[in-house]
Length: 402
Ligand SMILES: Nc1ncnc2c1ncn2[C@@H]1O[C@H](COP(=O)(O)OP(=O)(O)OP(=O)(O)O)[C@@H](O)[C@H]1O
Ligand SMILES: [Mg+2]
Image 1 (cartoon, rainbow, N blue to C red):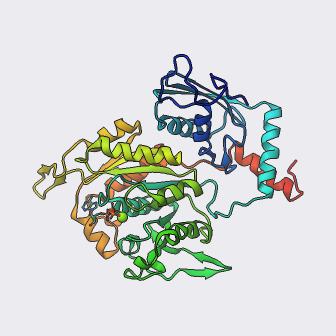
Image 2 (image 1 turned 180 degrees about the vertical axis):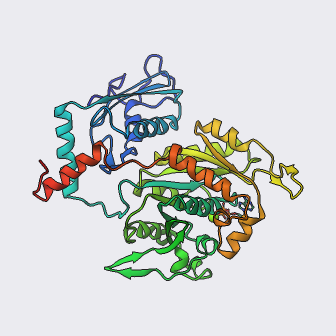
């Protein structure tokens, strides 16, 4: 793989390069966060990034897939594009997709075999599960409400959804979902608390299952960071289609920890319609950039209120979601109006998304549908890299398939 740096050394200002644009190796660093969802390893380490070129803020990345018709094609393209786009000084991104030749594929195979061998992947989250981190630039915009309702709406599609309450101090998921601890322990692993949602299942882990609401404050600093790591490492998540992570407000250590431990996480940024879009965008993009995470989309919450007479009031302004989406170059996934059923359902543990009398149930259903079909669809495990992985595992077990 070649990564030409125009000056021969990183960072030197050369030719037409604008001052703020990234160097090719900075682009490559950002791409380390793009993980092949099936091989569970960075596309950079797997040798899938053939070439990076930066010219006046225009970045071109050549990606080589295991096979040209890989069903992961679009997902990897979007992920590569999304990460590069969040970098400072990037004006446009072109991703060219090609296919590996036999030699490249065999190098990738032995690389995958090696890492399967020292399989230090302590995180028990299936490689095919999509991880959605719910973030915001500001507290109280409804992250937890969106996380809980989205998780049950996704589960209602017949899926298995993990819900990790990473707001260690201000956990609210157990109350909102009407579930209680303690977490069970089996074979040295914590068992998530399960709750059925329609034909699907939600598996929940929260600090609230370990500490009473008043004790949580005792857990501080490092311990808190380690708590999220424990939740990723020491929980038997089992089968999962999605893992929704409710993050604490702001853009601090927990977010960065998640980026480090689960580099394939994608962010859904929640905003209210009236928030200064640029400010929120700045913070969210900054967080995405620092952690090399992809922003999958924006969800606008509290977007107006429709009273019993059908009259609509834009209580918290309007258009903030669309402005933010434009600002960070991510799609607006949906807008969730203000409705008392969200707060009431949150207090009684019966999420509005599961309440057929709530006007928001169909809103959350559409949000979940867009995520499952468009924004972050599941990848069929019968695809290219999955087959490769199967072969690797079979080879390791000494039973290579014919
Ligand atoms: N669409 C909505 N309609 C009505 N009430 C809502 C809506 N979304 C959130 N709320 C209410 O707003 C309050 C804050 O929501 P929530 O706790 O989900 O926000 P948060 O962003 O997770 O907050 P924090 O930053 O403290 O974690 C809650 O009382 C919740 O019930
Ligand atoms: Mg919250």
